[in-house]
Image (cartoon, rainbow, N blue to C red; front, side):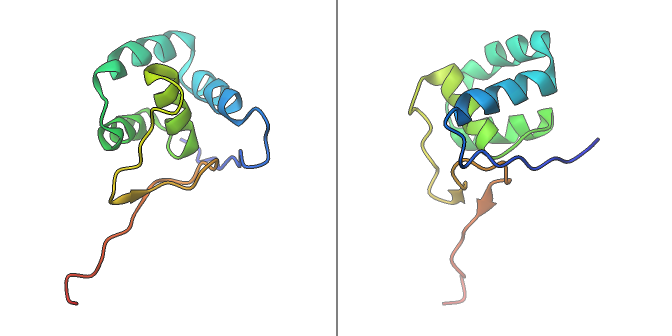
Length: 99
């Protein structure tokens, strides 16, 4: 399996481009099947987790989530930070317990 980083930052059509990349990665049938299956995942952390098993992360996950659940429906969970418009994997930002 090949790892590819794609920067969508300066693309006017970044959401459409990310969705196209997800569909090309999965194939049309799997894209449609996964779209149906992921409708039940409204928690963005769970959604991102399932997408990671399908082989994609970062901004394409947000684009795919909003494709399924509606424009501007993605809400970052409090303990997860995802850089807007890049394909970097989500990173956790937790405060040290030894404060």
